[in-house]
Image (cartoon, rainbow, N blue to C red; front, side, top):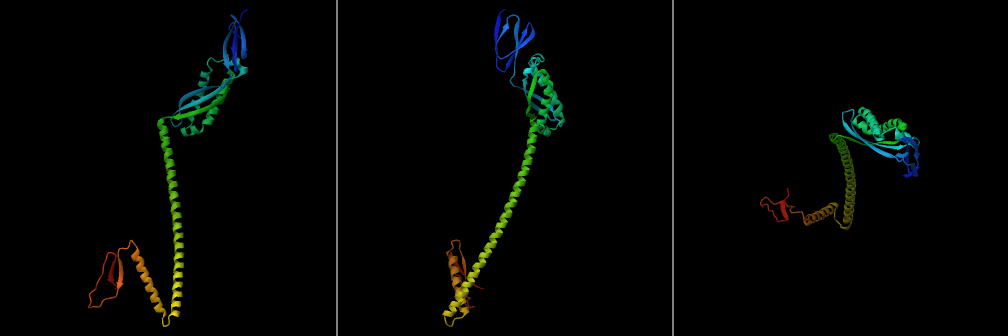
Amino acid sequence: MVFCPFTISTAETGVIERFGKFNRLAKPGLGFLICGAEQLAGRLSFRVQQLDVRLETKTMDNVFVTAVVSIQFQVLEEKAWNAFYSLSDPRKQITAHVYDVLRAEIPNLELDALFEAKEELAQTVKRALSDTMTQFGYQIMQALITDLDPDQRVKNAMNEINSSKRLKYAVAERAEGEKILRVKSAEAEAEAKYLSGVGVAKQRKAIVDGLKSSIVDFTDGVKGSTSKDTLDLLLLTQYFDCIKDVGSDRKCKTTFVPASKPRSSEPMSTTSTSRWSSTPSR
């Protein structure tokens, strides 16, 4: 007998046939075949494999959706014989089952509900595949719905609806913010006016107290003077101070100064300059 060597990689197994009949499974490493009698019919990998299935179907509200499902599966070591001899193309078998499950489930859901039910649909696909593929020597590790893509016009409409909702929410929030700003501004203005009034009241009280003290001191210091004389003097002093302040202001262009009433035989005279003009008082 002549022996022919062969090798099997890690995480794989080799299917050996003798005269066309299954003989044994070869483990990873170096092996030998009886030349002319045995042959290496094939190899099976125990690694996790992934199959992406894309299909188009329609929802309950008549929207066409393209779904992408990723199936992760693995050959069971104890059922390697079933996995090799039961199915000629396991990927087509898995694809057919995914089509059958999703085209039965998605038409029962509206588009919005479909996006929310992705996890439930994935579990339904996994259960259906597990029940079928386990007997053929395949274990379904995971079923994932990785994409749901409706028609572009439907997506544009959904984006418009979402944009309108967000715009409405933004307008309401902006209005609420302006309301709070106006309320706070009014409260601040009221507080400012209150404090200003308190300040003016204190200022006037201080002025009155000062005038009272000045009148008392002047009356006591100048013999023969009366309170009226003192008040006239203070008013005259304040009058000249007011004229001085108004005249020194850059924005002041014209100041009206009252003059004594002329006699009936004398004409009324008015003196006018670029800054000052005199008019008779009534």
